[in-house]
Image 1: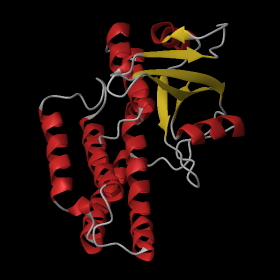
Image 2: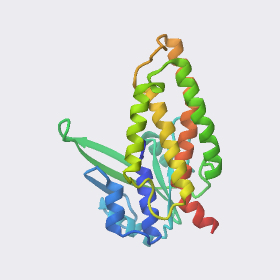
Image 3: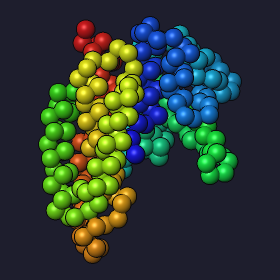
Length: 260
């Protein structure tokens, strides 16, 4: 249920590594998470796919000083700057990482194999040229935090009005599990991120969780097609705000370094 994009893990722990705050082994372990393996294909100077440790070292050697996240969806190229080929790949994956200091971007391709309960997940990051330009529609942390507070109120009102499961016991159970995971010490972001970024990310994930519950756990009282369409229309701007905030949080380490 918790929305933690692979691009976010790569950017957060990649930034910590580039800043010298974690070891390569720690960064790679955190990026891979529960996946089996991550490899990078298309890196300049490499003839084939390479492991993350080598890839992150090569990016540093190529002049990369930071990593930003993009979370685009149709009609909202959030965090992208072009060119069209990279944007299309990122839009298909609905996420990407854009390097700072070198005109390169990384788009994940996820492959799954094996029976239910024993699925082997491998990720190939495709390295492609990007246009060096300001990313699209990325807010500041302060702006994202203000938008999120309003979005959380709107989501609660919408879910209650439409009588969907996301406003009842199912949502509360999922939110309780989310809080328990956070209280157990799950590191929301990597070392080097400001406390405000951690706060914004946690709130964005909570808003995204509420929206996901509204879609996944049945229509509740919204039984007519028109009512379900109204629910989707009402929740769409809330989703947009949550994605903007996620990008702002994951990009905060880079933004702080550039300001400082």
